Length: 405
Ligand code: NDP
Image (cartoon, rainbow, N blue to C red; front, side, top):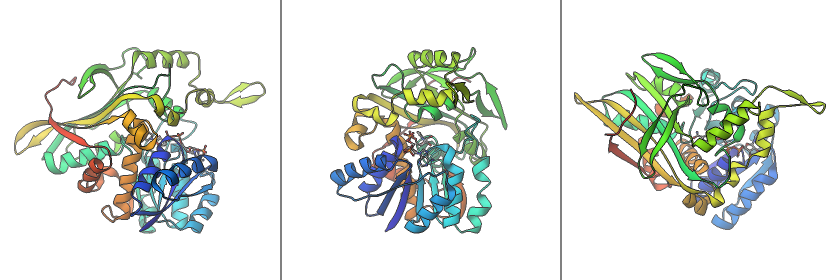
């Protein structure tokens, strides 16, 4: 039915490729491309054995817009799924425009020399995608992605108006390493060392970064895995949700971090290993965080011995038929089960499955439109059904737990 190109053969790319191969009646021709084609071949060989589906592979540097445009013009796919790094987003969007291809990603653009991410760079492509009659869907992993779909579902079915949203992300897993990140270490460490922002009464409020004195945290009682210390963090989906959820007065994002993770990160931060400016070393310039990434375990390879679960969801406080309600929608994902199915840990799995579902929504015409969209602007119903069918079942509860004011 449709030809796609997946860019990026890391932890998430592996899951997207395998989930697309499981749905080969929709994804009838799958290309997996990355700078290093050998990484793509490893995944393609596993898929050939597991699912008897044959993937095509190629090498391309997505930052070379002309080379990527040429490749897309040769392949002529209906959709590009970008699971490379946020640095590539704009280059891949440019190549999609030049080659006339629809676009989907999981993380918003971030300039390499500044650890600050916001949608303005990609929202600026609105007219260009509209003029070409193409669709771009931004942020379709789990958070952002499923969390946005949960918000669209709550807005459509559970509330007349939503006043406050708390997104809570717990990884209660154990990978057995003293210190590792669950997705690309460079992107992950840039994200968690930033000054924290949350949105209240139409304004962004700043609070200390998670490593700093005065960082906001509390113990949230997660389903299945129990109480876990959860830290206020800035996360990109808040920017689009603050804009698209009607009447919203407050949105916050909380993530669990263990004492062990924070202690390691604090030391690395204190000695300058998380810096993103170039330093001179042995006659050449290196970026300490990129060097640290080279030393840390590859997140894609953490899965084999990972035990425990992730629990990610949203608590909504709002009004329905004149009555005040609090609802909690969440998913629980097991690291070991994800490994058995697609040889990935649960963070790659919870990202890659929704990416495949978003692509399915676009290719089957359930999500239609021209221009640039965030996930909560699109209809959530079929997506929510597919989540349960494709390995990420969700639950809705009346919320009676504690959240700080
Ligand atoms: P990895 O580092 O494991 O993989 C990234 C892949 O991109 C690698 O295969 C790399 O391979 C490729 N790549 C990097 N630069 C280029 C380039 N210039 N051209 C072509 N390919 C390139 O990262 P993850 O799989 O962990 O994460 C992938 C994306 O998913 C990231 O953007 C991350 O932020 C996002 N993410 C989103 C989440 C969500 O819930 N929304 C959660 C987790 C991650 P090579 O070097 O061979 O080119």
